[in-house]
Structures are given as C-alpha cells and as structure tokens.
Image 1 (tube, rainbow, N blue to C red):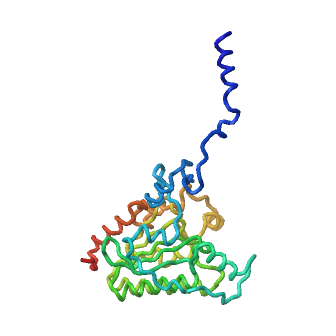
Image 2 (spheres, rainbow, N blue to C red):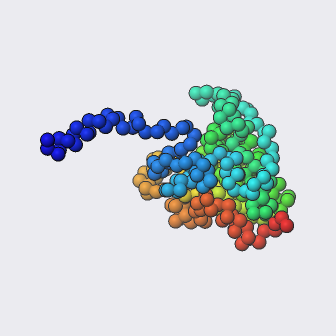
Image 3 (cartoon, rainbow, N blue to C red):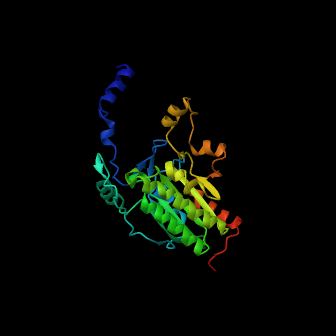
Length: 290
C-alpha cells in the first residue's frame, strides 16, 4: 500500500467537525475583544481596568466602574443619587420619554446618567463625577446638569479639585430647552470654581459629543482623553453635508484632537489614576490625608 493511501485511511478516523470535541467555555469566564478579536479571561480584563492586555482596546465602563478604577478603595461617598428626571414636555417620539427613563433605570440601576460624590485619590480629597452612556446615551438633562452644578459647587466650597469623566451623546432632546440650559448652568459653576484657583481635570471617554463637549467637558484646566475616543460636537456626516468637504479619516478621534490642540493628553485607562494623582501633585493641591 502506498504511504499516501495509509494517511488517507488515518484521516477517516478524525471527527468530521473537530470543534465538537472542543471543551465548552462557560459563559462569564471569557470576553472577546472587539479590537483584536482575541478571547480575554474576564478576571484578567477587570484587573487591567477593562483594557485589553493584547491590543489596548478600552471596553466601555459603567459610571460606578469608572469611579472604582479612579479613586481610592472605599473612599467614594455618593451624593444626590435620589434625583430623578421628570417629563415636563410629555415628550413622545416612537416611545414616550417616561418609558425611556423606566427602561434606562431597569438597565442600569441608576436614576440618571451621572454618579458623583466626595472621594480620595492617593489620599488626596477630590470631588468626582462620572457619566454612564448606558442611560439614554449619557445625555445631559435637568438631573445631570443639576448634579454637575452641585458637585462643582461642593468642590468650590470645600476647596477640592474637581474630576469629571464624560461619556455622552450630548443634550437630552426629550427635555428640549431645559436640557440646553444645563450647558450655561454647568459652565457658570465651573467658572466660579476656577476663579477660586481650584483645579478641574476633565477626562473624555468614548464617546463625548454634543452639548457636553460644548460645555463642562472642555472647560477644564487639563483635558485628558482615553485612546481612540470619539470627541466632537456633531457627527462627521452632518459636518460633511454642511461644509461640502470630505473629512480626514481619523477626524474627531482623541488622537486628532490632541494633534490639533483641543486636548492636553491621551492616557491609557490603566494609567489614569496615577496620572491624575501626579497632576494634582504638580498643581500643589492641598488636602492630603495624613
């Protein structure tokens, strides 16, 4: 028998579908990275601040996860968590605004798209806020604007640095003019904080756009972005239709904004806490816990 025929006979004994013999992986153990397509052990991913250790893809975070990775353990004291949005316009588009709010509350366990409170970063007292894109696209309505204003005023009154992590589609259209008013309100609070000589560090996560970009998110002393984050006011398609020109390929990425002087630095999430702590040291902020 020719040796080639012998191998053919051996091949017949292999399973027709080898994948059937692969060991099943239980749900909740591995996560496939959208950036490189590689499987990642979830515990390893969480230990790495939900950044892919192979390609540095930044997975989306909830507001509470952002706070967890940014501040000292057990130092976060949440404020005004009970504030809930209302429906002053009785807005309906496809579904009612009240239905959208109910669905977002059920999905996130939050009353609106912002978490804020007192905290510490390496023992240094700060005021911190973080947006959650899962709650109606992290949009800014009356509650988000009110909480940004309140946490900024608290930071001013207590001489604390302010750190806000933004992830938002912009103003919340379901609240109409009320949502647009939040741009002025939050900007005024931050201006007062700045006049007191207190630092404000803004972190722009993917995506940050619309009225949030046009107000408090870009009024900081230092603006940091996560890698590859979308940062802009409106989408590229609308801009192209307006200016009748083709936009650059990487337009509105964090890297494009850095190259054109719109932000100060791009920081990997793994290094974010350490970087902010160092910046506060450079700014010689008081408040270190002894």
